[in-house]
Image (cartoon, rainbow, N blue to C red; front, side):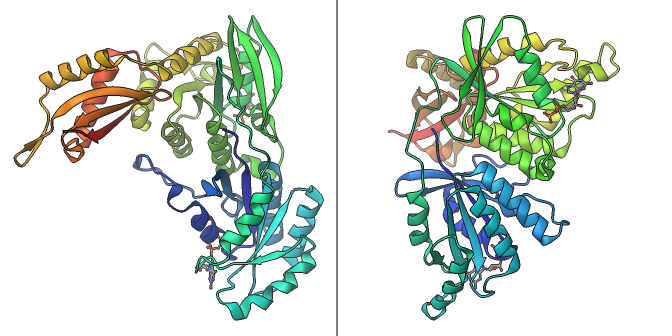
Length: 436
Ligand code: GDP
Ligand code: GDP
């Protein structure tokens, strides 16, 4: 579960996103394209020598209007904050620049391991350009070419030597790990404080096994919980911490370590584009999802307000139709006590396992109500179905030809499963496999 994090830092145009894409490559699996949501390629997963790791391109995070040096400092700070290893990219064609030196000083003082990639060394003759970069004082520079894919393996070998020892102890059994995500100022940390301040909540700080993570563990009514990345939620003051991209990055990182996620919306401001983006990542992560509308104290209500807001959410987050919605006020703590029971229920649903004969009964009933589709002279035949995984519940249907199971029929089967079982709050996966 715990994977090392590598962050790429470097001046604009040195080739950060080129290298990012090379390393992450096809591994960015877009489970389902959600219309209207643009994707930032700033966070991804790479693999080297059988270890997977997180990769961050800090280049996409800060404000473009800031002077170059300020941007670079912010990127370096983000890298120092978020990463175990920093990959400093420089342009071999430019030689050492003042900005490279400035950033090297910051990185040097952080005591984090740094690997230097000298990019745009497209051929062997250019190899000598790397010697200049020894003067940055950060060790051996590696000649690479993002454009041609050269030298990246040697550089990653070096990065690999700094990976912390493998530990898999991050997710504790019997504990519900949940993340509270949302754009800045929706009230995440207020909500966490309100939950922790509830009666009969017994808090015990847990040292995250991952080095930069601080989670909060607590027990309520005999159930153990852990709030992922409470430190990240409470931090304040650095310039980049309120940027949209940084909040998306934090949300993605918190999702990695959670089973259930609370997507917090500001009830006073309503849904904006950035909420959709964060909710989109929550959906794609396959975690259990709850939508929390906060600041409910701050709006004037009549008997229909909640229904109207619900409708707005269902429209805005059509892909999260399975997520329950909680209306709360972290400030007055009204209805906050309803949150944990929902978290517990969604976690159970996310982990639910249905016996094969019951799955088959539901699928056969569904097929008799709504016959399988045909394509030309071929008709989809379903032999049987079985649940192969939990968290999220994943079903395999064995069919004569997987291509015949189109999106709409797959959706129909998924909905039939939802109607038959209590899957509120959890996405479901339905996969077709060939079997004659
Ligand atoms: P970023 O701003 O640091 O993310 O840089 P990009 O990855 O967007 O690259 C900036 C420009 O440099 C683009 O035009 C790339 O095609 C080019 N580039 C990236 N890597 C190489 C390389 O290894 N050799 C050459 N010649 N050009 C490169
Ligand atoms: P975060 O950035 O998402 O962690 O948001 P904070 O918890 O720091 O809250 C941002 C602002 O919203 C603060 O000024 C809070 O006092 C305010 N706030 C948080 N929850 C509520 C609420 O339920 N009602 C109202 N009226 N204000 C709230």
